[in-house]
Length: 87
Image (cartoon, rainbow, N blue to C red; front, side, top):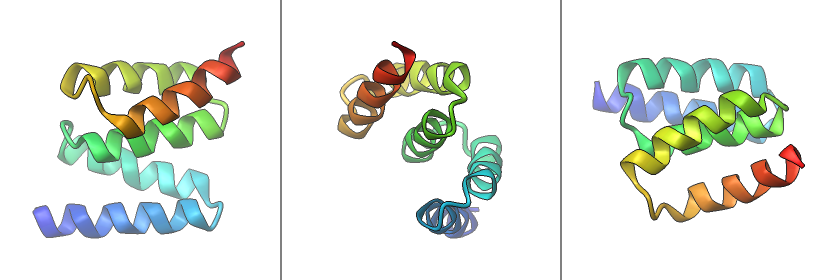
């Protein structure tokens, strides 16, 4: 499971870097089902939802991230972009 998840996460990151956001989101959602407490993946997923304008979904995921890791630096970066888009 761990190696599969790590491989899937890297695949999702690669899709994101190549601007294939729907594919990246699909993989990250699968990781979320397998490992719902994977904060790194949740931040990545919220970032992609923010970027693609799915702001309600991004907000929901960010709430989960902050429940799990209130001081996550990467989450704060995503949150600042999300807040700017919500205005």
